[in-house]
Image 1 (tube, rainbow, N blue to C red):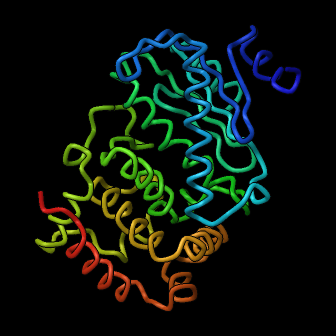
Image 2: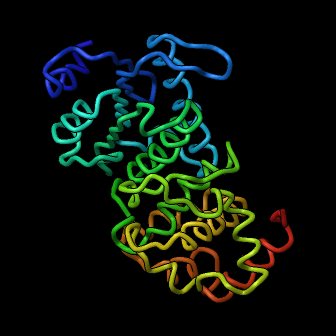
Image 3: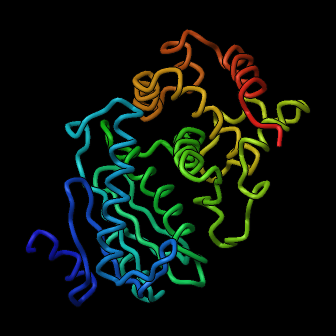
Length: 283
């Protein structure tokens, strides 16, 4: 119990929280319907902890990494009251905002106001946490650091979208467009959108996408970034992890890709396009 006292101290009261092998979760939400059942706060706390552990296991399996490569446990705080979310952001994440607030790198933390005004149901909230906790894990896996503001935006957002797509086939979380939560791209059906862009030759060029920060990615870039990750991670997860290390070391994506995959950006673009056309749905 004492290990998590810093959270109560930051919030100036005792909050509902639990710790699992790889996660710390604060859950100050009301009861909620999950599938057909209304779950109590306590049941939800354990359900969400279990869900985050399963994301962690999937992340490790995909990137072929182990516990040894993580230096900090993601702290995830889900609040019912906006003022709690604000206070937590300032006290534990060094900033606050209406949408989700993250602290990335060595002490990975995320706070969000999870009430009905922000998330219509359990699925929407679960998806937001999958997206956001993927960012925490990618920033914490060795070497700890955030690539999203040093031209690694495509991988940072692409991987977070990829996990949303993997479980739901929908991507509707954007880290820098939270001011307007209605921002969406093609109903969140990224695969369909990417297939159409590639077929019509109207996709953002790889050379442009590869140099963006998270906050400069356009909506079409978010979609193709998910698709680049889809291609690369299915080729070889360990190489994808190697690529992430290079991006954190400020090596350009183009140079890192040449070194790890033996492809220049334009060669990558060609194989990625044929992958999309042969595997993505048309409707």
